[in-house]
Structure formats: structure tokens, C-alpha cells
Length: 415
Ligand SMILES: [Zn+2]
Image (cartoon, rainbow, N blue to C red; front, top):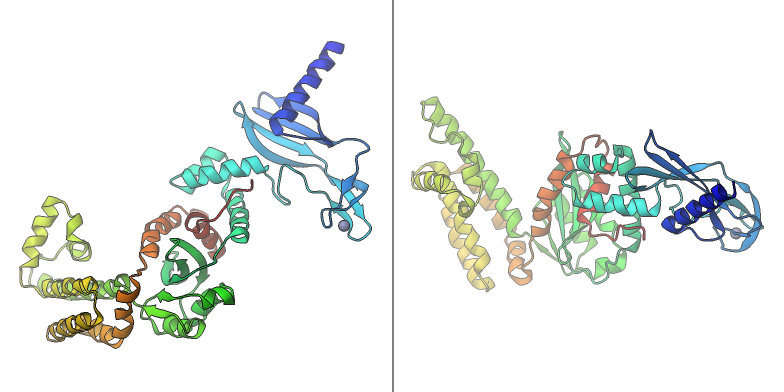
């Protein structure tokens, strides 16, 4: 009997050591369920110890114990491990009866800090959320809650002092016609805030997410030529240069080239000509990244004299604009380019050329700042994978959390 008791004490001490449990918390019991492959460790508050009020930190008397709760902990030898405890409640003269904070978990969490730490590492390392859920043996809601808490922690700790170059961008969200807008720190390559929508109110909300002091320090903002974004930025950061960077310019020209291709393909097909079939990607992507076979196809198309080939050449020509160092020569070059675009008789190209001409001053600011929304462009693929992995991905709030979790460069860990 004595021997048995000693063995028990030894086991409790061992568990306490594993958990890092310190007085007045002590291990009160260890239950091993071989069939369910589960360990449950009971913890208790040592008799006669004082408690402190979680609000003010003052020592006070213990009122009672909260109902029993369990927390999922790191597995022990592949056994799912849970901590079970009744937490004491303090009676503070000022704050009344409060549940004391346990050292192994955050208030409201069903997981220990160490488990959350592991879960965050697993989530960051996994290619998909499904894989992370499987590895952690957690459902979507549990994973979402861990991410929510991690992002809240990260935002609280985030330092945005000295913010100078930012970008505003819109992205489509979900399968419908919904949009989200993002504010990113171009120097830090991180997403700062995500808001639902893509109108002027959305852009205003993005700017409001920055403290006044940070807004005043902004030197330049990279953004699209959409009037709503321009108006909101002019009002929120009047001192900052607006820059329509090369990604935004290319986006509009890409759309023009694609519109020309679609119309021409339709005409050709009507005559039974399949020349442009399956060529959409060829016109949209950089020939430098083509395979040999594709490059040969494209070389042939490029010199075909087709309308889409002319549109593509005009787009390609404008990319030289970014190589200029002096505003005067860049302006001259643009004038030359504009003349060629205007004479092209390609309606979609002419329309975009006119828009670029209207916004030329804020395109040329690019030569001064050399900023691009490459950050958000790079995030595209990341965000895309968050989206495509997002089974059970229901609300905008969940999506925002995921973007900030993966692309916010936040200090997410609880310890
Ligand atoms: Zn108190």
C-alpha cells in the first residue's frame, strides 16, 4: 500500500515537472485511458493558499471554485493529453468574485499555451488548413479560434512606427462578386489591415485603421486608378504622393489585350480559324517563363500581324517606361507611346491609353519613389491558397483573420 502511494506521488511529481506546474498548483490525479489513448491530468489549488484578483492583482480571500474545465495539452507519447481543474475564484473588495488566471492557458481558451504554440507552428508550416486540422486532430472551428486569438495577440504587439510607403489594393473574395481591400506596408512586406468591399468607404476605413500620427508620416501610397481609392487617399494622407505603379498599369493593359484577343478569336472562329484557341495565357504571362515549346508558339503568334499581337506589342513597349530615371525623358517616351496606342484602332487599348494619360502625373511619381505593389502581388498566391483551402470558410471575419495570420508578419505565439 505504501509502495503504491509512493509510486503515485512519483507519477504526480513527474507530471508536474512535465507541465511546469508550480505551487500552489499541484497534480491531484493522473488518469490513463488505454482504450481511448488518453491521459487526463487533474490539477488542484493547494489548500490554504491565497489568491490574487485577476483585475487588480491584489491578494484576497478565495470565494469558491469555478466549475471543472479541461484544456487540451501537448500529446504525451501519442496519448491525447488533457488538463482538468477547478479554478479558484477570488473575492476582491473592489472587483468582486473573479476566476483567477491559470498559468497554463489564456482566459477563454480550451487549449494550453504550449498546445496553442504547437498549433500555430503547425498551421504556419502546413500547405493547407486541412492538413493542419488532421495533424492537430482539431476541427475547423477550433483552428479558427486559435488563429483568432493569435492574430489578436499579434495586433496588440505590432509596431508600425516609421511607416512610410504603403499600398492599397482590392482582391476578389469568395466565389461571388464580393471584394476585399487591403492596406499593406510596402517596406515591411506585410498586410496591415483588411476591410470588406472596394468602394470609397472601404478605403476610408483602411486609412482609419492607422493612428493619425502614422498617417501623417506616410510618404507615398501605391494604388490603382479607381476614383474611390484616389479620393479616400487624397483626404486621408494629403501629403503623400500617389503612385500608380507598374503592376496596376499592367493590370489595365492586360485586360485590354485580353479584350482584343477575345473579340478577334470570336471573329476568327466564325471563319473556322482556330489560331487563337487556348492562347489566353500566352498573351498574359511573361514570355521569359515559357517552356521551349510554348515560346516557339508565341514567337510565331507575335509576328502574325493579328490585332492581339499589335495590342501585346503596345503593352510590351510601355514596360520600357519604368527604366527611365528622368521625368523629362519618361514624359517624352510616354507621349511617343501614347501616339502609337492612339493610332492602333484597337478600342480597348485606346481606352486604357487615355486613362493612363489622365493619370500620368501619378504614374511618373513612380520614378521618384520606386515602389510597387509587388508585396500584394506576391501575397496573391498566398491568399489564393488560403481561399482554396478554406473549407468551412464562411465569413469575411474568418478570411481577414487568415490573411493577417499568414501575411501580417505578426508575433502570433502566446509565449
Ligand atoms: Zn481586484
